[in-house]
Structure formats: C-alpha cells, structure tokens
Image (cartoon, rainbow, N blue to C red; front, side):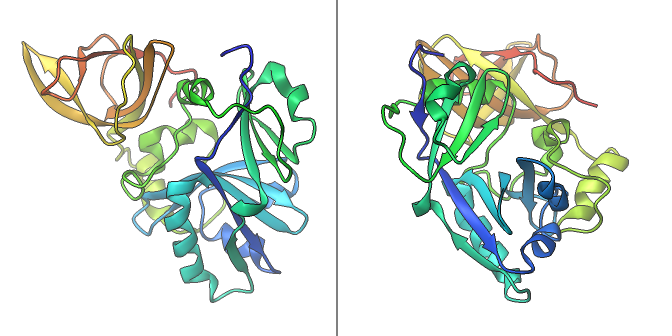
Length: 282
C-alpha cells in the first residue's frame, strides 16, 4: 500500500431496509443470520436466487432499527430489484440509499483519517472499509492499491457479468463466515446446503498475479496448459493493476494445484502465478 492510501470507492452502493419487518424479511432472503447484526458491528452475507446462485455479496450494517447493505454498485441494481419483488409482502421499505453515503478504503494504519466516518469495517489487519455520511477530505481518486489488497484478501465481490453465476462456496465464502448453516430457510438455501453436505461443489476461488500492468475484463477465460496444449477451465472474477503488477481472483476447478501452468485465455501467452490463500478451506 502507498504511504497515502485513503481513497474513495465509487464502485460501492448502499441499500437501506427500514420498517418493522426489516430484520425478519432480510433473514428469509440472505445467507447470513441477520439477527446477529443486533450484537455485531457488521455482518457479511450473500443474496442468492432460488437456485442458490448469488446476485450479490454484501456487508450488512445496523442503523438504529434499519439495516444498510454495502455492496458493489453493479450487483446492487439486481439485488435491489429482487428484494423489492418480495418486499411487497412485508412491512419493509427497500431503497437505494447511496446518495446519503460516501464509501472509503484505507490501510489499517490510517484509521485516524477516518475518525469522522459513521462505520469502519476492519476487513483484515491491513485494510479497512468505511462508510461516511460526510465527505472526508484528502481522499484519493486512485483506489487501485486498496482493491489489490482486497483482492488478495480472498474476499469476492460480484459485478454485472458475474451476478447469478456462482453459488457462495464457489467463491470460498463459507471460509469467511458469509453463510450460516444453522439459521433455517432462506432464498437458495437448499442448493447452498447441498453444496456443503453432499459435496456437490467442484469449483473454488484462487488468487493469481502477473508482473504486467493489465486491464483484464471480469469474466475473461482462464486456461490450463497440459502437454503444450491450453484449454479454458475457469474465469476471472476480479482483477486490478497497480505498480507494474496485476492481481486477480479466479474461479477454477477446486482440485487445481498451485504449481500448474495457468494462462489468461487459451489464445494468449500471458502466464499467471497462482498464490496461497490467506485462509483455510474445509
């Protein structure tokens, strides 16, 4: 991270749920146990469709009796529409609250620069996410270093081209407490549980990097080389370039070895180095 790494993160949006059924309604829609939000400062989770594939990943925050969901702007569009589709049957208002908030990223050593923020989310020991109802001065528009740290933390975010494509375990989210397996029914719960208890999941999130500064589109194919031949086996989930290197998150077959020769697209000669995850998978 750079010495001055406080940056604004316009890639994020905020959805607000208010009304007497806000907690009970959301409990039936997402993978995390929303009731824990009454005791915790924040709570990560996923919003899935009926087949268990994610519309979005989010961080939930309590705001008095209301709930804020912090998620990427691209995934917020579909999540907001899907939540409102079912929200009409409950006493809950679900709105885009993004205009009332600014989202920032920083290195943990710069927490003092976020003193005025309403919420500070310590994602790792090295970087944080903050939500502020007031603008924070001196925040950089260049957020590439923060995004590289976020990618290397192994925490996945969804965008327009990846929403509705993956169940949570394909992005390792069970390892980061995005899923409660004890909370009861929610949208997509049957498929998410099947992935755990019946061993149906065959894919996982991997980290990779290349010593080139590349602008890589989310959804780009990733290829495996065997005996000089390449075949596409996965996709790019996230990518960010800064300071002469590009770091990526990939979805690959879960038995892929870190030593295997992985390339960006079977038609290109850009080799990727697979990296160790910062957490263990069960």
